Image (tube, rainbow, N blue to C red; front, top):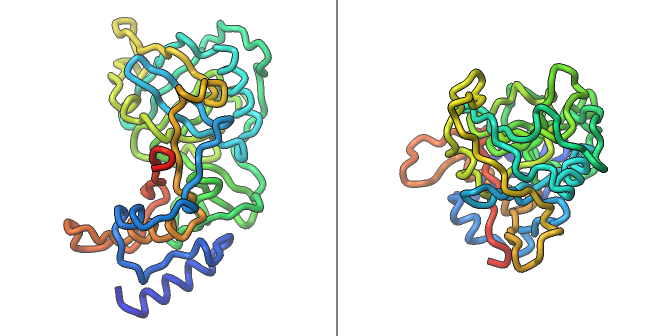
Length: 301
């Protein structure tokens, strides 16, 4: 990278809202993603909070979801309440639309909600929080500023002082009808295709899958409209959905995630913006927020 371009990139990164010295991209370290992870330190990683982690058990294995109470506190609490009541157990994954979403839950609302709320106000956006926001220096089609907050891909609008999670591969959202307040967490979707960013600020997002995406993305596609299973198809059913804190320690999937406010993650972002792998001949020099992977590994590795 020419010296003038590297300097311009660093100045731009430092000038973006919410990005400080720890989050500024470092264009002077020509590393690959594998090298960034290998060079990282223990303090660059954080363990998943078991109280904000869901274990979704499918016949083929376990899907691990990290919840985002900072962006949708009421819906996250409702989903946790439903999980603790065994609400999701045995319900079908009734929609698998190619290059879009997998959806599961109780669309006909036949099951009792128990202690959970049957209706909730939408949580599409929240006031910008006083937490590190690792902003990308590249322009985005859907938002003034995009980056990472609380370990999730997110966006901000400085004019309104609002921020929100964005719909990337693996994002978990709340299904709803036309009424914005009709979602309550009893129906959930996971993005399994190209990031449908047109959904941003139109659905309440509660987290992201951190392990087990292959179990969802490989499900048979629905033959009906919008990927719903028709009467000739047999949907996969959820065996159970549990809050990790409620699962005995010996049965938990212990994972840790790279801190998105760390120097290591800043280096990782730069490694993805300008790929140095042997296969790449022309570095892109920019990246989309949904194309930045957030590394996950077994805890204590």
